[in-house]
Image (spheres, rainbow over the protein chains, first blue to last red):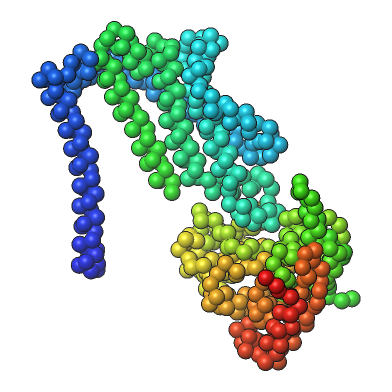
Length: 262
Length: 249
């Protein structure tokens, strides 16, 4: 450490200071927004019945925390996200691998995938409920609809766009297709696979909430729906809050894993 | 009994696409002798890389024969080093051993010896990003040598590098090939590289390519490539081959 020149020490300090500034400003922005929100509601400028207020949200959270079933709701939503995310990643991986392996079927399925991916899946909601039934299965299917196709398309595009020189090199060594897959395709795309997982999880999240809004008797999406039906805005905003919290935790968790891998 | 190691007989290659067909190689005949370094030069786009790809088994030929004298192992080296950034230098070098399921301790030790011999041992646990372009190409050569091939197929191996590095690597390549006793088929567009390195130069015609001329390079004193460039006969060869290539823009 002490071997650095004075200028470099100064440079490092400056770097640290700037980073700190950014963090502080971010936190300040959040605090200011909440303060203004609270102030406006205290001064009766906005109607807390419609817009709630930070103190009301806190109260709602503390009362929810005292009820067992709140964690149940959170857990159900989390469980659905993890389950559908795992299923769509697994299926996505298998199908993307198959399409990379076999260019005939890739060309056959390409337009279907594009259409399925661009179709607004919410439109399938009513059908899914009729076909699968108003249960947790509907939610998983809804979520799969939303996350699976983008996962497949992303993965196989990454797979087929792998640096050709790596593949030529392995072919010149008389590698089998499986060896090329294992030693090049998977390894060269590790970063891309991680970013696909990120997209997949957030898509599954969207799908699960969408499904819960459509059918469900449990979960955060259900709480939001229920809250809006009985006009309990505190409950709605609090649930949205918890959702935001879960999604950022998931995001940073994956990012943490991503950094560990690289 | 001559020492021909590889015989190319009436080799032809046609490329097909929806607009039509292109004859890339037309009835090419060539004999390659054991332990010789031959350089193949030709106008750009003449099909010299195609020829090498066919020899390496990466592309199919349309007709003709490629006859090896006995079982010959081939090592193919690309224009770019193509080292895997996620593998250490040692693991990159052992790639061919892994692919062929001969990644034994003994073979790994051989690779380590090669790394030691050619000044890369201290980098064995480093990743390619830590190495200069020239060093990476040297690693790529060792990766090619790791499976102990009899014939090296080099496709413009140094064309992606700067001039000084290329000169240095030519010497390097020459030294390594001679020490390891390999037959080399080198594709290059750099005439100076060809003359200074090779014992025989094959000049190809424009597409569809055929053998236009063969030069047996006989310099006054055969030495390492950078010295060969100073040889009195060097410019003579250069002029002749340059005229053969008949480059027009």
